[in-house]
Length: 116
Image (cartoon, rainbow, N blue to C red; front, side, top):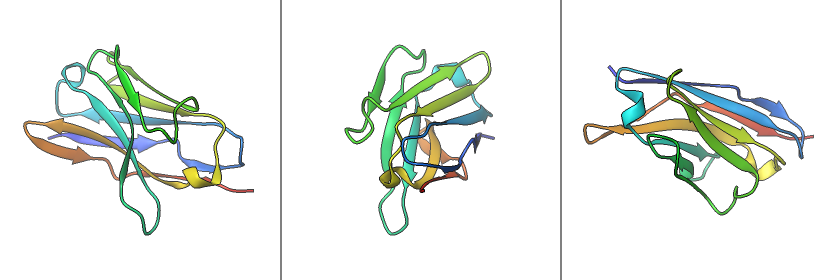
């Protein structure tokens, strides 16, 4: 069974940094692209970043380019999201996702709150 577990969220001040982790199991992690999404209250869940199975290719939403970095450690079955220069508008629940056998699997999310 596919399982994704996010961690690392919390309260940070504007301009601060945070690193999120997503631990994956139940599938061959190194064979699949991984994704980070976020959802703020009352808003749609939006793609934040994506990374190819081997980690050589990445994509970012325009809103986070230059501030966020997605990476992965296939030996640890973990994908990361390094978030720098955080803004209040980054406040959201952040979710890890994989598409496996034609289905999307989501973690339960980790809350990031950017506030002074």
